[in-house]
Image 1 (cartoon, rainbow, N blue to C red):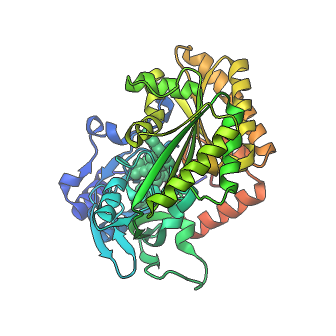
Image 2 (image 1 turned 120 degrees about the vertical axis):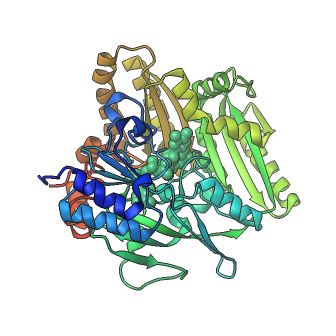
Amino acid sequence: MIQYKAVTPAIVAELSQIVGDKYVCTDKDKMEDYSHDAVTGDKYVYYPEVVVVPKTAAEIAAIVRIANRETIPVIPRGAGTGYACAAVAFGGGIMVSTERLDQILEFDEANLLMVVEPGVRTSEVQKAAHGRGYLYAGEPSSGDSSFIGGNVATNAGGIKAVKYGTTRQQVLGLEIVTAEGEIVTLGGKVKKDATGYNLAQLIIGSEGTLGIITKVYIRVMPRPQKVMDLLAVFPSVDASIAIVAKIMQSGILPVSVEFMDNKGIRCCEEYLNEKLPHSETGNYIIVSIEGDSEEALEDQCIEIDELCSANGANFVLVADPVKIWKARKSFGEANRARSLIFSAEDIVVPVAAIADVVKKLAELGERYQLTIHCVAHAADGNVHADILKEDLPMEVWEQKLPLLQEEIYEFVYSIGGKLSGEHGIGYKRLELMEKFTNPVELKLMRAVKKALDPQGIMNPGKIFHIE
Ligand SMILES: Cc1cc2nc3c(=O)[nH]c(=O)nc-3n(C[C@H](O)[C@H](O)[C@H](O)COP(=O)(O)OP(=O)(O)OC[C@H]3O[C@@H](n4cnc5c(N)ncnc54)[C@H](O)[C@@H]3O)c2cc1C
């Protein structure tokens, strides 16, 4: 067991010297915002001993060197929108907020890339690309709040991953501060790179456990001129999920293929106080396609419409994009409004197995007498199942939830699925990770952790136990 040291007044004074008094906080009353992420419940609230808000990579490197010298945990922090209790100071330590590293440093049109600091909001990156006629394809539903550094550290997915992949596919390179306080660029502006191990890709999705990202080189591409959104309404979960493979086999490559179950639709409707189409009994498949030719898109729409109608859709409509995406993106908040405490599961399975998972969830929800609402990035096999506590007494919830999760993941792993498609493991899923991950795979992950962070100071207590 690593024995971590406490942050002493002398260390706080050293930190103040690096970033300035104004950017060091030890006052618990002012640290509430930094004590949790989007995971709800008292057991996911932990205060750091100190929050520092540096402006440069050099300042971060100096902070990490102190932490390394003293064996103090360092917790990198983005916008705190994570769904895994990963940017939380489990066990005290120094929280390094990246909110002041908020500059778009370069728009390199010739190389079709942007160089951005980690504290830039995802939507600001999208807007900057958009303004010049380009597309940044990363699009988590939290994009108005999340930071690009947080997206990289969690390998965020979102609604455009079907066509463009997750954040991983958008990143060409990273600058990081290592766990020993050195600054290094991994990858960069090159499109291809066979120069040894791809360490940038190893950092992506590592949830702050291997280093702190201080600069991101991201791809942009010419922005498609036209987008069309179709809403197909099906009477059953089975019929709606079955259409996904048919669309993907048709030769059309959609940007998004999203599923919403009926209970989830009605919960969003109630939250937004807005009538959604055919919400009484329908299950939704939302398909988004984009391109430059209106005619070609219309042809694709007709083909998708015919496919859906021939395969059991009751209605297929051209959707109002603002309304339909507002509804889809409100799913998490709508569930939170219904039940302040809920568990957001982020199951990923082979695409063809989604219907099995959604059916299993319905069966388990009934057996455990717990409400479960589902949406899915359907063509990615990624099911978000929000399990609501509602008015259940806390002790009953805490007893039932782990038993239910155990049954869910026994099933998920039996069909070749995994714990998380895009939200990550953090502290929230650590015990499930230990239980369900192949021991050899875990051993390799621990070896990587040991090699890159020999003192074990980077975001301890996340992903897996370190020895
Ligand atoms: C309403 C809502 C909708 C969401 N929708 C999606 C979605 O569609 N797709 C999706 O993938 N996720 C989604 N999420 C989850 C979350 O928004 C993402 O995981 C996001 O990428 C987190 O970014 P953040 O800046 O808030 O990071 P934080 O929550 O602050 O941190 C997340 C992790 O990244 C690490 N980290 C942050 N910055 C750095 C850095 N510079 N260097 C190293 N490590 C760092 C932290 O230590 C932590 O481990 C959603 C969340 C909410 C609340």
